[in-house]
Image 1 (tube, one colour):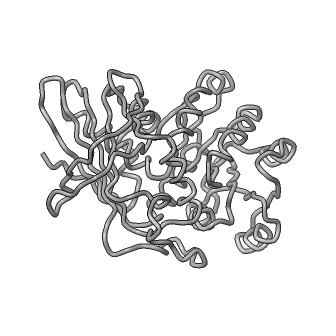
Image 2: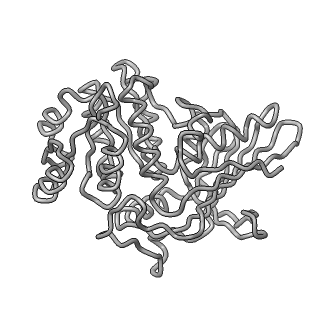
Length: 332
């Protein structure tokens, strides 16, 4: 039974993550249609899920116009997002349709930020980062409330699980963005930066400066002026031995490892007080699947804010309680 007032379009539905998200959308009772470039794959998936489908490339304006008729929101799953986000956002604003994606590419967050006023004028929400950031951003918001005046964020991510080909390609764009930090409210690009140690629960582990996107999204939700981000391993585009997922197994629980993925948010207050909060979540792509569908569910039922938003800026830390398998621990 459908549980949503509006209808969603899922673009990139036949990929590894897109297929899992489409099945989760059925489970959650979303009204949706699917789209992408491959007619054969779309026809098979549409028949399996009993939904309508649309075949067009991201640069096909007429294709977007047709597919977005009668839709409340678009969920863009097609990476690398450096190729798909701009035309998809443009089409959504023209059609007065909300835009959601699961990118971790910081340049896409900056792109959405530049379209803030245009989106507001159209009454459209642009919410990139509905995957990982649906946990990361509200975690930071939660931790920031534990001090009186948060002035600095240091965040570190320890990922467990494999990577899809799309994620590997997108990680190359993250690397190409350079080492980005926010200082005194402005984004700066560093020529070099040192590793830092974070304790995820089993002693200090070296993590490496990586532009995960909090310099844009967490700033949007908290206004913290100084932000640094770290990743516990080399991004897969730089790692020939990076673990890949079995892209033929698209069950929602596929690709999970026994260990958890972990995020630490360390917040410093103006008085020097330092607090740390940890998010535990299932490994692999399951958190992305669940969070993307949860956010789409909310948007389809009228829960949104126009303009460029982050998961935390529109849904607050309360979003964490709606994500199964996510546990927040205040360490100190």
